[in-house]
Length: 135
Image (cartoon, rainbow, N blue to C red; front, top):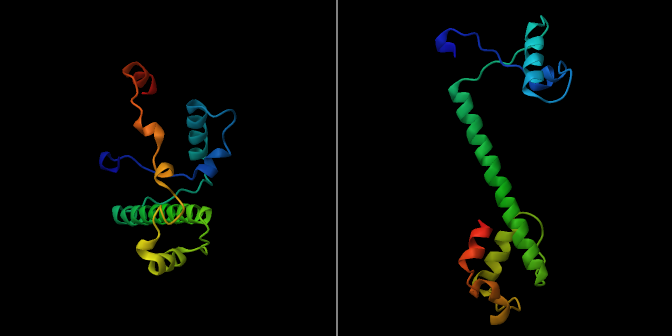
């Protein structure tokens, strides 16, 4: 937009929200934006450079990976707890557990038998007319 000589300004949504008069519709939001932009005391946000945006994208991606890693470790802890292995919280506890037990923690060591490891529903074949209904 700047290449077309438009004056681009960013406003925080919390500042604009004060000017919304009625429900959440596009028309009401556009009216609130226009009203807020006309105010002489409105504070605008600086537009970040491409480098700043790239750094923020990397930080967001890292935060996502850390959250997902935490979710997986918590899931593993809860599964192991069902089989009597109590782990402390944190990634280090998981690493220590794997280091101590390594390959010895397998489904048969956790009390699972051949019957409990097998999912009976996976052996069933879904007839074509029912398969269409599932999609």
